[in-house]
Image (cartoon, rainbow, N blue to C red; front, side, top):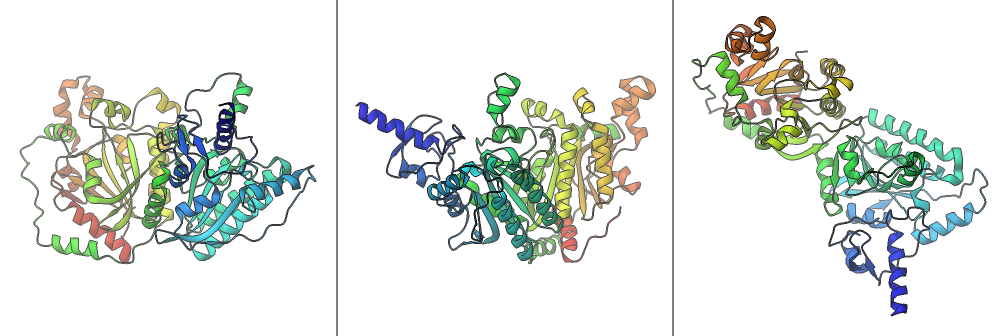
Length: 550
């Protein structure tokens, strides 16, 4: 019994060497015939079953560390080709024992260095893919790692291919001192040049991703994905705990924590990683055929898009209709009109505002960036979204998505239904006015078409910050206002009850916007003809350019 106990204890130590429970541990040989215990739930798992499940616990879905070779095989189609040049050991500090430790890492990991790059395809989508190896000196970044990243960026730029890097690292390589630190500058500068040239870089943050790697290329993705439960941060939790002398909150520095605070677009399960990457890559390709869009437009020519008779509704009745709970919501319009929807999160500065949602999708087969306001559908979601009133993080997220769309020459669709920006203490502390102003400035200079649909209530600068568009469309019972009629009545007459009178004076209906030449066209509340109009605008852009009104 004692011998069996010691054997199981040894097996558990081997497994822990592949997880973040002991990031400082030396890499170990993997014995594939052993039973293992999941470090999260403690249940025994046959190692063969574990490897067949991409090193995810089949019981609790805990993601263990995945060796670089297995990650390449997981993500790339068969037939990929390694593109790294042979390495020559470099020891700039003449660090005692460094060569022996480096050679031992090569033997135990089966890799020539802590990162490997390959040229291949992901479900037919070509790319350059890099995978870091945690068993090679904890995936630390030294000169050779920096050289390989720069060479891969150059190869992707020359071949006009997307670049993907799965970052798994403890950060800088201590044995190379300042030379390791300078790799942060080198990789960041090379990525900046690649992205300015129109290159797509997808960062995949895996467990763990810390130190100089987090503070350089791992945080510079045009799209940033993370594996569930991954440790992500600059300083490691042990360093933080010892520095501030207090316990850290549950979930601190997890992938979920990073997403909540605006630094990660999506958290992806390992079993879904390949299909998720393929979907994102495909949506970043410029379309070469337009059959679906052309068929939709052709079919719409025989349909009469007349507005419902609603002239008897007063302006304030229009306001009430625009606010109605059962009114069609922007999210539903996106789901009706679009396919291949991939939502992105975060402003990369502070958080992820649920009052503004956005991502990439296809409309009639044509790639777009979509952005919409979210009021929520029940009390819990309404509170989470501030009843559709965005905070600075929401406007900054929208600007980030618009900037990515411009870089990729992708048109933008924004759908607006908001009473205005959130009037809160925190919003003011974080620069609500500045965030709106920056959006207005950015949209004035935008080089791709921005199509806006006002589907309900569009209030004040909070709505304008998403609607400085080349084409503005409104549903018949939507409204566009300086502020709410109630606010107008209180400010002018100190009498909220005079809101209906204020609505008459404010000229806020969709018909008024058409008369003022603010709106280009009105559509029925049932959306008849709207998708066809948007498709025609998008097709016009992709086939030759949509004229801008800015």
